Image (cartoon, rainbow over all chains, first blue to last red):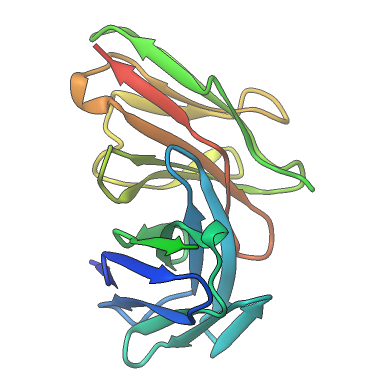
Length: 110
Length: 112
């Protein structure tokens, strides 16, 4: 059974810092990995999708990497802004379903 | 930009009542999903649906739950007899040929 863990559970940084969020998973037989952003009481916004054959994906200030063999993914956020404050969820894709981690709650202070 | 929509945004119901949560997936998508998130907990997979049938379901998705695609645009989740522990945010998602799943804004279900 796939288990997904995210570290740290919470992170507080000043504006402008570069930061790394970590995701680990127990079963390396995955189809893909998605990173989401969730604002309080809101839905899930897809940030990046990495296919199992890929090593990384970039979108603007976000860069996500995937190392299937070690069961790890990282989300790198460059030059963080207060608007980046949210919970970031990692979700590992099997053939049909996504298995989610518990998330990292990020607070970026001005 | 196409998006998944869900109605209602908030549903309050009494224990034992039936509820239907509605979703309109992105129009050219073929795969549909329901997930739920109990307050403070992980997002959990409930069911996936493809070609008018369930393709996978979780242990949570017992006989009290059912899904339906009644027409070409809607996708519904029915809970026949709600329990207090069914209180959660329910998310609908869809995907096309590319495996990225797109989520709706959710329906907050409160069972009293």
